[in-house]
Length: 355
Image (cartoon, rainbow, N blue to C red; front, side, top):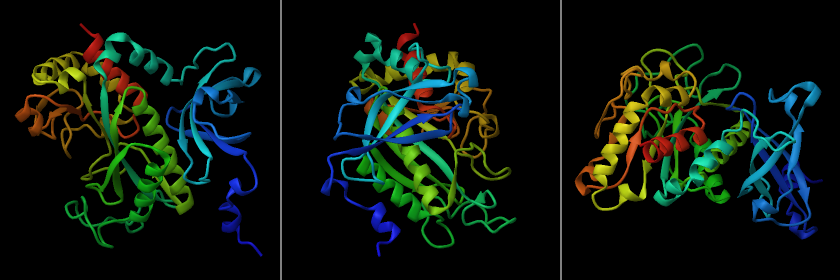
């Protein structure tokens, strides 16, 4: 008799040309991921060739019950690491039947900014450091922590190894490989300062692809933690007290910054960011005030600052960038639960389109 795992791992290509497409979208909270699957007649590589679909927006807090239909527009395709073969994951955004983006569709506004000729000419690159916390399912307490208690103080956990320091490495490695399989430009992983907290990095990616790839990577991580019976948290400060929070630092450069003399362009961009500090903070994630305290490698939420190699600043310029006179800088303000469409497009808008 076949085992369940045997059935799950069936190779569909042995018996049919049909594939399964998992349509993924962002729910009403702005951070919850939803998905459903459909059968297609054959392999598809271009999202423009995928059919639009609909869902019940009243069940995701995105539409009223008496007019509940929301339309999914396929935008990006990734290989499916769970079903494998020619099956795909499809990142979608959501519209009304009349073709208007629904209020929680942040991708549409970002796409307009990235398609602006002045932005496209600058080829904005992003490298996003997504921090997250793994929680024990029944207690919502960090993985590896004694129930109702605390581990030893921070220090040995960052990039640590060992059963008493690294908790959840099998989940993290599975996610790493699954993202590479999917075609996401994941560039690395590491254990973070707080035990049970980890980070993955995506990039460099250009323009709207940065948001698509972060959302796809988050979805894959949600699915892997589901299999492992562990809860994924993107809360920017999951544990009160003397514990590091979780951010999503955004490394950024434009073509002008990467060219000779780019350091002056970087300085002008940072000045523009300083003038819109409050607007950026308001868009950089819920609960960020609990994280940006001026402690635990953060700047105070109310004060903009920047410095070379300073992880206590709002914006950090790396030593290599200073030395070479060109390169990128890091916006350290975004929270772990930020919307990458909002953050990446806002940085481009402020630094390129604001005069």
